[in-house]
Image 1 (cartoon, rainbow, N blue to C red):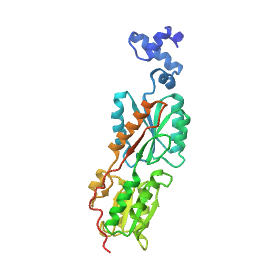
Image 2 (image 1 turned 60 degrees about the horizontal axis):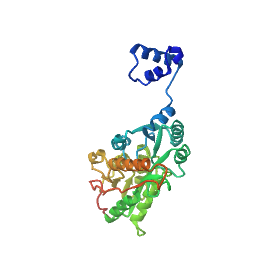
Image 3 (image 1 turned 90 degrees about the vertical axis):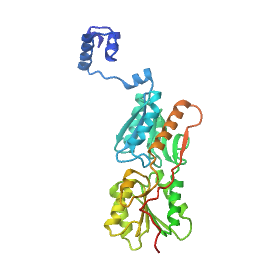
Image 4 (image 1 turned 180 degrees about the vertical axis):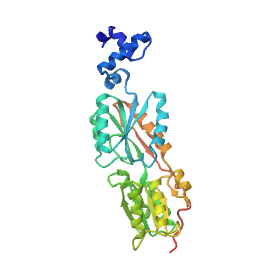
Length: 329
C-alpha cells in the first residue's frame, strides 16, 4: 500500500488511523489506495495492540435477559463499564448455535476477553465454545449454574416458592405454571420453587412449558382454562406472557381475579397498566445489570487466577395487585 501510494509505511499508518502529521491530500490518497486494494482493518491485530475493548453479548432473537428487557440490562451494564473504557458488543442471533459460532470468532479475533452467556441451557454449547476460544464466559442462570465459571446466580427458586406460598395462603388448591422452554435451567428452578412453596398437601400444580412466546403462552393458558378441571390461579413466566394469559381468561368468559388469579413472573409498566393490574415479581433490569457488571469486572480483575466471580442475585418481593384474590371455594 505504501508503494502504491508513494509514501512511507509510517505515513500509511498515520493516515489509516487518522492521526495528525499527514496532509489532507496525502491522507485522501492513502485511503483511496486502501479502498482500491480492498484493505480492511484486522480486529485481532488491533486487539493485540490496544487490548480487548468490549464485553461480548449474543442474545437469541426474541429472548429477554432473565425476564428483563435486553436493552434495559445492557444500559446499566454499559454505564458501569464506561470508566474502564469498555463497551458492550451486543449482537442478536437466531439460535444458540449461532451464538456459539460468534463467540468462537470473537476469540480468534481477540475482540473480547469476557462474554456474557444468558438464559443458560442444559449442556449449553455456548459455554464450551467460549471457553475453548480462550474467552471467559459469565453465565446468567439459577443458583448453581455453570459450576467452575463466573456467573450471576438468580434465585428464581426462592422467588417462585414465595409466589406459591402466597397463592396457597389465598386458598388456591389448583395452580398452574406457564413456563419458558424446558431446556433452560431457569425453567426447572421455577418449577422446583413452585412445588416447594405449595408443599406436599392438597394443592396441585400443573407445569406447562412453552416456547417462551406470547402465542405459546396464550395457547397454553387457553388449554388450561378450558379443560374440565381448570386451575384457579395461573403463574406465567414473563410480563407479556401474563398479559396474554389475562386476555385469554377474558375471552373465555372468566373474570380475573374472581374466577382465576393471574401472576406475572416479571414486572413492567404493562403489568401496572393492565386491567386489572397484574400481581408480579419485580423487574430485574437494574439489579441484573449491576450484578453483571460486578461479575464482569471481578473476572477481569482476577485475570486467569483465583476462584471465578459468582454474584448472587435475590429476587425482590411480590407486588400484589388486582389480578389475584382469595379463591372462593
